[in-house]
Length: 385
Ligand SMILES: Cc1cc2nc3c(=O)[nH]c(=O)nc-3n(C[C@H](O)[C@H](O)[C@H](O)COP(=O)(O)OP(=O)(O)OC[C@H]3O[C@@H](n4cnc5c(N)ncnc54)[C@H](O)[C@@H]3O)c2cc1C
Figure: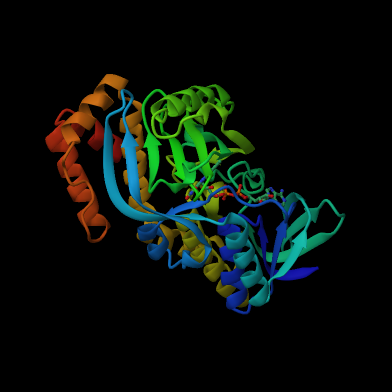
């Protein structure tokens, strides 16, 4: 089977890469080992969705007015920023159908290995088939070994993947709250514990932990106890909530991409440390567009494909660098320091309207005013990306 572009992984980035490549008229195939599995991400903020040109409203099952950040001893900060809990199945099915509508062929099979051939790239499938493609896009998630089997180091700080476990829960009224909640500190070292109301009686609770191994179940158990006790007044009987399902995986939130193109191969989404639903779909879109056009020009060289990494760094790179510097600063803070920071930030306006630079400058100004001692370490982290 011969294609111009072969995308491995129906991840959020893989789905948009396949659609975007097929839209250029390049002969495109999308291969996933399990087309019934649905990617993990289900919450999205409106600002991010519109930056990535995603229309999420048709798939929204619950709308929130913002987020609440919770410090280790329970101080809270509220930030207004509209967001949605999505119908995951409907959302990803829509993007799979749209890749097919643009002309991408969809194959269900595991890709066992990838290699270079005289004519381009070869993918060896578990079905025994071999796919020939001018360009392969590795969108097979944070654990993908495809690009790395060709000697490509796709992540700058692979030890900084946040390992996550999230449970879907049911309890009367739990899903009706109007803010996503992010708890920080030793409850989920290096990143966050989350509560995401999903409408009516449904919600998800999870932990995303960095540098404590892949098994983060113990952090989830502690978080569930604390969450239940904090809600004892508003949601009696929460200790009897039903856990309907569990999802695990890696979120490369503070990892930063390494090399994401080489001759004949491109990497996108979690495999390239491009975390998050909206931004990984935007990355996939840029990747698929460059791949499709380069394949039609019969130029799969690293130089030609580098248009993708240049566009990605220009459009999204700074935000990821800022994110890493902030999360590294958070990881080095004690629970006491985080509590003091929350107290000093109380009443300040952390989110202003406007572009990324204005938002970042305001947040940095407010943080520095609240706790001047944070600044030197933060700047050091920023320079060390
Ligand atoms: C539990 C959890 C919850 C999250 N929630 C959110 C959220 O609410 N909002 C948000 O913005 N971000 C969220 N994230 C982060 C976000 O999910 C990821 O950054 C994003 O989904 C990127 O996924 P991915 O690229 O790693 O690919 P994945 O979603 O892991 O998809 C990889 C795909 O590749 C396929 N595949 C893998 N290997 C092969 C192979 N060899 N052959 C064929 N197919 C293969 C798999 O079957 C899978 O379909 C969450 C992460 C986790 C772990």
